[in-house]
Length: 504
Image 1 (spheres, helix red, strand yellow):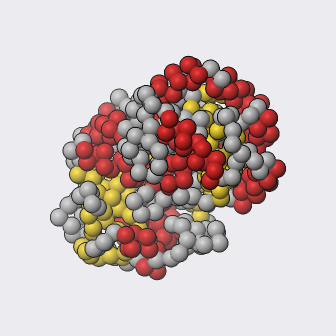
Image 2 (cartoon, rainbow, N blue to C red):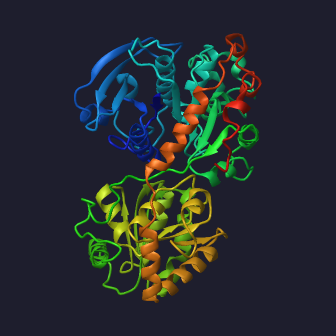
């Protein structure tokens, strides 16, 4: 199978959140399952600087206000083919893929990611003139969501998979951007791209794609509810009822191995945890914490409201009073950063905070901590809880999304249902009781470290999904001419994907 994997992040070069890790791990796992998968990514400065030789293999025309671009090809050290969208005026900028250095969204993000989406659709239709054409177009989050729509409006027959990594981020822009983005006026409809009087890239991907996936089974169910569907629950629940929504849990990189992680100065294994104790002391020294025999609670996270860090702040005093210490690493919105800074100043000897992110320190905090705090309000999948378990660090987490799917309460971590300081504190009390029982702590650590969170399982599920979609009947061109028509009225989807469900 030929799969084009369109993404706005790739951890090898640029990473803002979990999407970067998924875009690095899943395509490689698919390749190990015999799939010819190629990644499509904007040519950010970090990509140009690190990718090595890039050969221009195609010139793609623009559309409406979307400028033309070139497609460059390079190979990763492991042989994976990477296509990059070369449009210097759109991507050659400092800052993150989405924001300027001052933290504000780029004002032309609609054009920047419409260019990515259009490039994906043009390659899928064979317009690039490459000697390789995908059987499936796999889209990720809102940044590539318009690709499915561009294909349908063109009457193309290439099946599409849209993966939602976080439904809270939807790529919403004013209606007056329709013309510049090459969106036909009839598509600005409830059965199309319209979302509360504006246009939504993510809704376009959800509505026009053949199949929708999320990054955990529980999150797939959650996005069909009013509470966690971010205003799209009516659409997602209808898609789920048709058997076109699947929850496939993410994996983690195999370098998350406490016995050989190059970022750890002290290695360890389930049968010999001396190195973990040394890592804890290293973290305490690095964060200027007082020497302690008590437990170390780690937080490695984006510092945003979703992650429930206000709940951590509300329980910090009690954790310290019980003999615990906190090591926090992350970067996020200024209000959350200031809140955590005030908290750390109040407990200088017992709470260490590093604003920013670097991979070695993140891995060291995960490795050296006894427990990992994750009181997320919602969590589509989460990677830290899986990484923590591999390192014998027991997660303490709100029972939502992928956290509920990957943590066994009382066996590999501690889950709580009440999203409050009281709920988190009760779970911490359970953890402290285990910490005082050396035998129970050792058993839970060994069980957690024995869990496998490899990408191979997710890859096998995606291969099965791709095969079903490739085998579906072709869609008549005449039926796709009206962009307002719901996809469910235009294709025999039940026969193609009926076996797959939210509980898959």
